[in-house]
Structure formats: structure tokens, C-alpha cells
Length: 163
Image 1 (tube, rainbow, N blue to C red):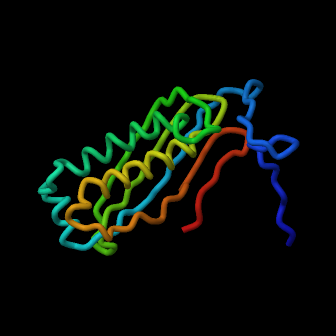
Image 2: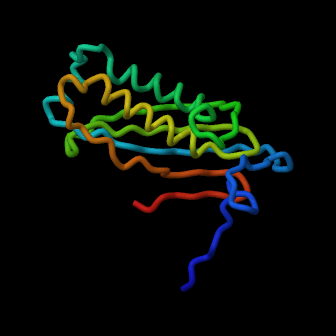
């Protein structure tokens, strides 16, 4: 089966980068869910969960940083539109099998363009904040698996990542 070629919307006719014109798109409810992981040793995970990190509340700081990241995505990703985000959640769950933390963000808007980049940015910034908060205990932590899990709304409809 031949793969369908899709047009890259952020490129103009001559290949120049451009911001997509969403003027004529209807404002609809859009939601995106993203995920990432911070892999660390069991002892570092215990330090985070006990609240004994030198810099303070790792999980609280990471949640706030992720929310702030989602709100400022348009300042970080050059061709993203500034959006009136109506909901951002950042959930961080320990996973002893990694060992480490699983970070998940849900972002919602009623607008003319989607919030996939905002959800991915929220997860990325939260993961980076976790790293920053405990790097004194372990510099070898890994941030991995940052990806879009789901998106709903807009012209392209729904997407759900395969497990």
C-alpha cells in the first residue's frame, strides 16, 4: 500500500517557513493528551516521593512549570499560534518498574487550531523541571518517550497513538 503524501502546512510554495492562516477555520473544542517519562534510580525516585530534594517540592514545581510551559508554547515554538487555553492538567505518577516518573498533560481549547504542541510542551517542561530539581542527586536521569497520545477536534478529527 502506498503512503499518502501530506502537505506540510508550515511551508509556503517556495519552501519558506510560515505561520498557518486559520482565519477561516471554525472555532471548535480541541483537546490533546501527551506523555513523557523521567527514568531514574530507585533511590532518586524515593528522594522525590519523600519530598527530600534540596530544591523542594519536585512534583509541585514540575506541575506548575508544565502548566506555564503550555501557556507559553507560542513563545517557544516559532510558528505556533497564541491560544486562549481553557484547561491544562499535568499529572505525575511514580512508576517503580521504570523506575521513574510518568508525566501526562491534557490541554483543552475552543479555538481555530489544535493544542498538540501545548500538551507536548507541558510534558517536556515538566520533565525538564524534574531533572533540574534532582540533578544534584543523579545526573544520569533520562527523559524519554515524549509523545502525543491523543487529540480530538478540528478538521483532521481524532488521533490515538498505538500502544
